[in-house]
Image 1 (cartoon, rainbow, N blue to C red):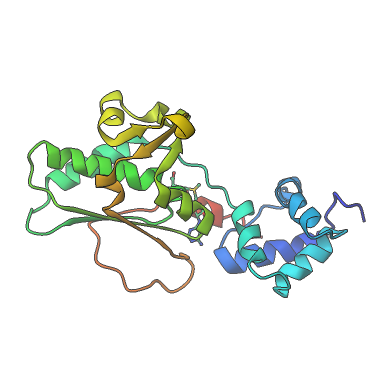
Image 2 (cartoon, rainbow, N blue to C red):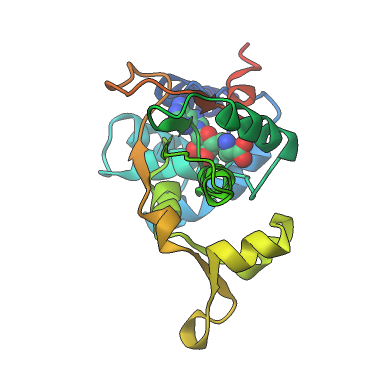
Amino acid sequence: MEFNDISDREYAVIRELLYSHTGISLGPGKKTLVISRLFKRLQAYELSSFGEYFAALKTERFPGELELAIDLLTTNETYFFREPHHFDLLKKLAEGSPKTSSFRVWSAACSSGEEAYSIAITLQEIRRMSFKLDWDVRASDISRQMLEQANSGLYDIERSETIQEDLLKRYFLKGTGRYEGLMLVARTLRDNIQFARINLIQPLPELVPFDVIFLRNVFNLFRYRH
Ligand SMILES: C[S@@+](CC[C@H](N)C(=O)[O-])C[C@H]1O[C@@H](n2cnc3c(N)ncnc32)[C@H](O)[C@@H]1O
């Protein structure tokens, strides 16, 4: 077996592992993707085949490695105000809600946090326009690495392309010096979003009731099971 190849039997092992831990189903044609994303991990442990690496994941021989492999295999693509009509609808729902308690939203597969911050900006804008709206945004993901990035609120400035100019000015700080090329989400937003690790295919922890749940671009990862 070549170092850069995966046999059908080995592929079945990693598919099953990923499926049982996350619900994500790797299609049969994704061997190349698995190779390119996990190749460096074999090197890190000086293993000579994917078979050996997958067996190590299964037996949890390397602590924390399964979680890392899952992170590497998961698609985390996201951006600020992705699918803008969802945020228009959120605005409508929040404006129409009774103002007796906080308007609560859950970003249930938040990746690196752009979705949660877009939600918070939308709600904070309503509040700014003098509607008496209190809001509470919770956000979760399976990936600790993504949650770390989300919590930091620090993004590459190139990710600002999908944010309206006025919102960018109001809710982001432009990095200077060693933060050149980066932008930081304003503290008003960062302090009001709670991030937590939640695996959507495991029993959910006790959660507050929500007015809106964003569950986007995650269930598509769960199909193609053969
Ligand atoms: C493509 S991103 C979607 C991000 C955002 N919702 C959006 O639409 O832009 C999918 C996210 O789902 C997360 N994910 C995959 N399986 C999960 C599971 N079982 N539980 C929680 N999150 C999961 C991944 O870590 C990834 O960050």
